[in-house]
Amino acid sequence: MRPNKFYDDLPALEPSPGDIWSGLPTHGLLPERRTRGIVITPSCDLAQGKSETITYLPIITVRQWFATRGFASRMRRAVEKSFRHLGVSSHLTWDYSMPLGADLEKLELEIHEKLAQRSSKGDSLHIERCKAACKLLRVMTGDGQPQPSLDLPRSILGDSSFSALLRSILTNAKADTHFLPLHSKEEWGAIQSPSVALFRYPLTVPAEVLSWAQRQTSGDWPTACQALEQTQPFVRRFRGERPMKLARLKLPYLADLLTRYAGMYLRIGSPDLLPREIDAELKAIDGGDA
Image 1: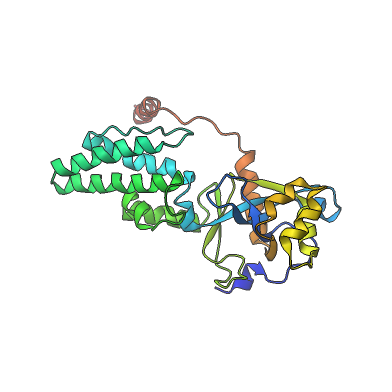
Image 2: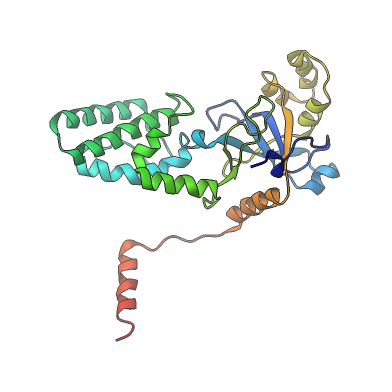
């Protein structure tokens, strides 16, 4: 797979959708303070200076995605069955909040007690699944490595379900991420490991800041930032690392990303049928030929 099939290694200086930058702030939404990001602001706004801001989607590695809250709901469905099998109270809240350390400690203690009490192979599989979920939850809440071993989600989901989920990410069958293949493992590589752009995390920075960073020739980046801070206080977020444009995603791959991104937010959606409603519809179908 040739990198230049997907990426333009020498993008023009002018800003454009598809530009991939390093050193962009995450505003505290992700574990890392800085991230690579891909610009999604329309080209007409950028070319004519209509937009005073540039919007980008953060890019993280596929391994990192398994340590984000985006995986939490999928993990929940897998481990709740194990909790019920073991008779363990999860102590966890699975809505929009993440468990506190004390809740995880209680759960881990219960699992340890169950491990001492039970010896069947089936119980051991459920216990290992719950233990892996606890380790991954610690990572999600900031207590662990941001790129955990894939053995954790594989243990939680099982080999078959894990492989199916991984394939759905790589083929863009998953609605809220977009797969970006390897560009180069070198330091200058825009995508140094198979990665995804996160549709649910659009972020914005002043266009002036990125334009200024591209024109800046001073080797003393922190000092150079201080001059611009007088008119752009936001620049202080960039002091630690100068943002750099590394490459640009080519057509038709950029068009596919933008279409999928817009499609996710344009859909209205509706609640799923409840299990009892599904049962009623199935009965109606079965009796349809009567």
